[in-house]
Length: 221
Image (tube, rainbow, N blue to C red):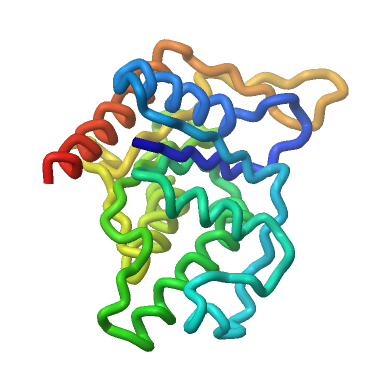
């Protein structure tokens, strides 16, 4: 089995942003839980992904070759994977490169289906989970459903038709994380976020266990 984790953040002002750290932690935990699983981390921060312009060429090719960017390679990685973990911060509402990636994936699936109702949507049925994170305190985390989880769920729903995990608790398709403390640092315009490492481990476990269960269920089918 192969699982891809996409770190959607565009953070460049620190060596390794929170999205990358959470994605790596999830993949390492998954490998410990399912020995032999192949994993790959895709940080979008160093990728170029143009937005879909609706040229329609993917209706016939079921691929997007309109731009000389990183989309084709990422899409191929997704096609050959068994599951996906999306790690995204709250931007406006989610990072632009993730939106562009979703636009082009959706176009391939939609135009393929629109022109042939029997078209086998390439990513249909593959399980995915979302790890959302923000700079706000736990008291407002539920308000982030509409700006983090809903956009991802909508983008990967019909016609892409991937299958979200169900953790059994809010937000169901994944987990939410935020810092326990925010500090100011002289000379740094950005907030310094201090995380509870035990909480990260606990939340990562929720995602990984749910995803592993979905993978095992598909294998039995």
